[in-house]
Image (cartoon, rainbow, N blue to C red; front, top):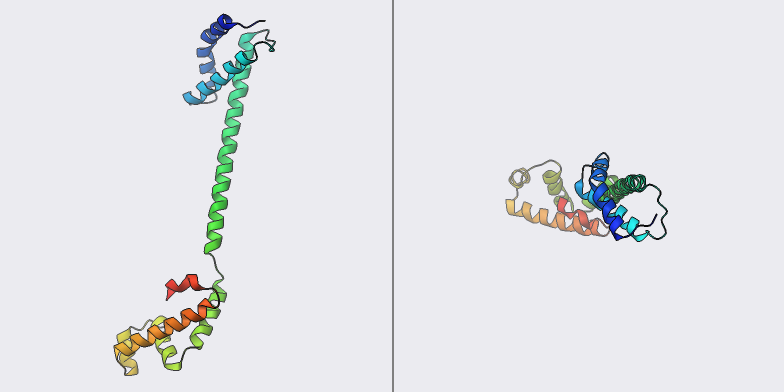
Length: 174
């Protein structure tokens, strides 16, 4: 069977609407259906000299069905790959934000233990026992300003100690 411009136009006009209804069984997306049919008719036209079609209607319906199934499979694969990529990115980001809490606690305890005694006592009262600066000042018999200064010293020394252990990204805790 030879396909010329007139017969091609005749096949297009005769089967386009039927093919649209048929493909609607696979997808309700009219844009997808139009794209699939465009591809089917384009292949028919491009291969018109080499293609051997005995029944054009059968050929068009089989080609349309295969094309839409390929499209749906590729779309499903694309969604799978996008989801996989997203999850990998999420895991990579979470991995960067994670740290060993036991090691952190151990190094923090070492840093606190390296503080001068008065400074360490004030820091522990404030950060571990939740005393306010005013309460610490009354308890120790010193001014609130002295408590503030001692806390500033403690935080700076702990920060310096932690930096040497690569915990610099955790300074917002202090």
